[in-house]
Image 1 (cartoon, rainbow, N blue to C red):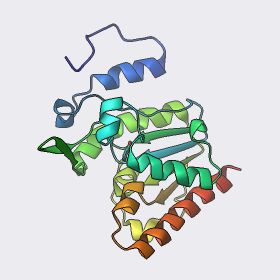
Image 2: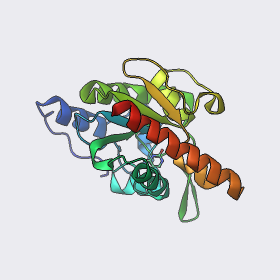
Image 3: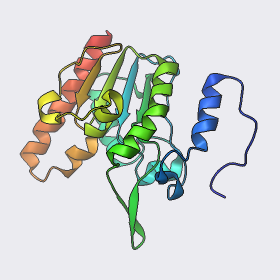
Length: 203
Ligand code: URA
């Protein structure tokens, strides 16, 4: 079976959250995915970074941002002087959504209903970690955090005031997909600059 056998819920809130999320059936995505991928990082991280959903690698490993998008993120974090081990990294949606194509599993963007169901877990993570700043990578992250859609080209790089404030930026997978080399370089620079802004806000 892909899901752990029912065990009594652990007493501490953090372990209880992981225990409960592992058995989530709030939307249909659990049926196809290998496992729930909850966030990773210190429970008292000042910075939380939110992506879209686990990809192929993350679904198998049970950890966020370890595949190609994670490598882009790691590089930009390094350039911005941010230490990944001190950040709480998570996703708006906790199960991998895909369509099988031969041996491959092709990523599908989660729909608004799936994002909405999964907000419950994202809110629990925010309550536990209580970050001072959240970076929203891409439109799905922003939808999960704010509960409403926004246009990334208008919002990117500008702090949205709140408790905590939210900084929208590109999703690293978007940078990988940009066909034009000059555009990819320019937007990767913008992505890094946004992470530098996050570092400055927290300094
Ligand atoms: N893309 C995401 O949005 N999240 C991951 O964890 C991996 C890739």
